[in-house]
Image 1 (spheres, rainbow, N blue to C red):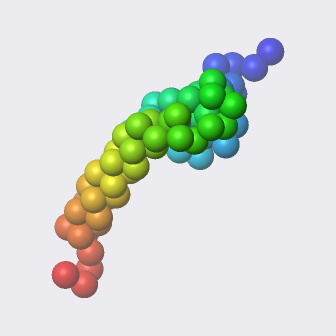
Image 2: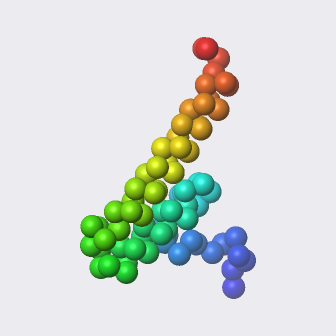
Length: 72
């Protein structure tokens, strides 16, 4: 019997991004691929939403890091 913190996300490879703001978009993409037997064309909308989320997350991280930089 493990505690709830020991439980893996529904997709083990998703564990590395489980703290990401885009986690739900990522898992939605994976669920879509499962549902449509890996037919990527059926899941393009999910991929686009995830890609846009990651872009915004990256921009926010770069902005945070810019304010912390020793060289700016």
